[in-house]
Image 1 (cartoon, rainbow, N blue to C red):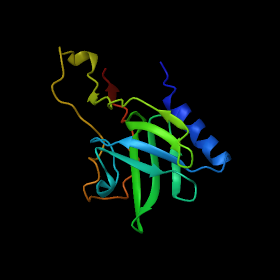
Image 2 (cartoon, rainbow, N blue to C red):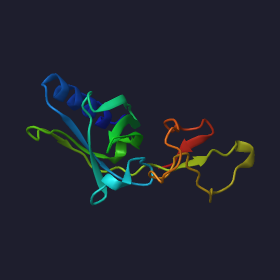
Image 3 (cartoon, rainbow, N blue to C red):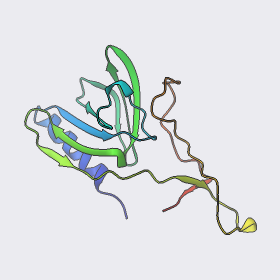
Amino acid sequence: MLSTKPYLIRALWQWCCDAGLTPYLTVFVDEHCRVPLDYVQDGSITLNLSPSATGQLDLGNEWITLSARFGGVPRELFFPIGSVVGIFARENGAGMEFAYEPTVELVPVQSTLEAQPALSAVETKHDAVDSGGDKSSPKPSRPPHLQRIK
């Protein structure tokens, strides 16, 4: 079933912007998130998502990507929708909280000719939380040979 979470996030972001309020997003940081670790407190980070504070903001159905400055240094951020635990207006606190939804791991699809009972290796196509590596890498996407396993 299609999740309502990304639609609610986009709607509340738009409402904040239309009302002249500052949209803030709280993200639970896990291994699938690329955010500046220096700003993570108690396992989460709260981001100002106002149009004046972000660039190239994409509130997608599976991932949120944006560029922002931290301490004057430009950074590229991305994280899965499931890591978002809240969106609210800074000025009055109006918004919504969400449950943390761990990202489903991706595993190779077996061909029907090689039918085996189970897969033991799990592949992921995401960088770990910002570890000082290449910050210009594009938004992760699911390769066509991988499928979601629940």
